Length: 191
Image (cartoon, rainbow, N blue to C red; front, side, top):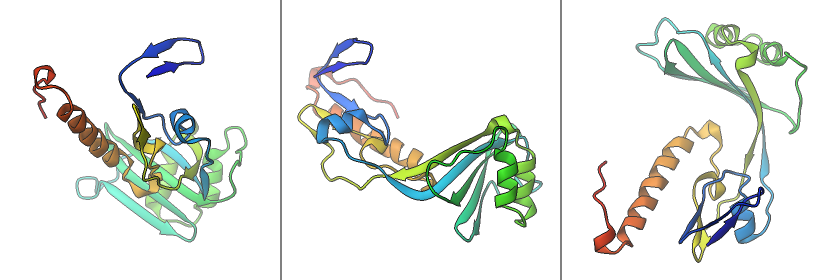
């Protein structure tokens, strides 16, 4: 298998694993171009310098509303990561330094847990992205080229399963590779 990068560098190998995300170039080259589908939701992601008083008992929270929801989890070091999902059209743009204000407008009237997290987050610590999905495929590869992760089975972040699936798929893939190596070339794998 030969891979040619934009800068002209070429690499040859026995196998190509495309683990290049939902906008996978490897997938497009393998199966032809296909469009991702907009989920109808935009997600704001932030890291807050805030620790709830009950963090020892509740490290993960989900707050549900009509066509919007908010998820927070403890990431250690006195910080909480949060995701704010809101139904809206794709391609929206916030005013410069306006994401935090917009989030306060969207989640106005929500419980203190949500508002405290927003308040404790610096504007620069907030990212925004539209959430896309792809139809699942039963064919993950052809010949010496295969796909892994979001390049073949995208997981929307609201599922909370992307990292788990990545670990499972990598383990399964590693095991399959090991099983197909000649006995003399196998190394002991420590898990």
